[in-house]
Image 1 (tube, rainbow, N blue to C red):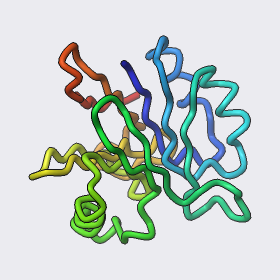
Image 2 (image 1 turned 90 degrees about the vertical axis):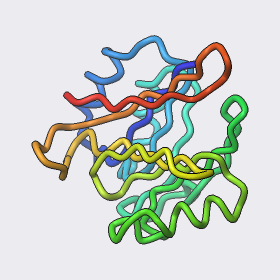
Image 3 (image 1 turned 30 degrees about the vertical axis):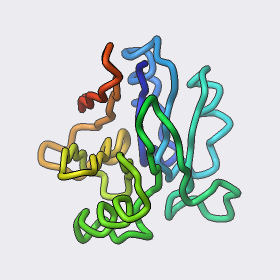
Length: 159
């Protein structure tokens, strides 16, 4: 299984289109918020099952603030991350995910990519595909793949 993970598109889709083209085919797409009212467009672009949550810039959105998913053998929490103060560090969100018996937590908001294979919890952030903030400021997204044993592997891609 191959999953495209993105966040923080902020209504700017050129890089998202490029990532979708580069990674097709994929089985699912996860968007971790700040779509700014463009969820229908993103669903059409994905052309596969889409999981999406609201970000701090998704004003008046009916999108949920978080979702629980099962991806293979993994119990996954997806959220934008701002409710867990991820801009100050990822310990709060990891602690919350662990307390709620998740195996993986996916979040956005910081516009900086992260893969943290921590003790008992995997925390990932694809960064921002539109407005990156990490060194080099290259737009980023992530691929999650389940191998033949069902184990998750994450890779960050830069445009």
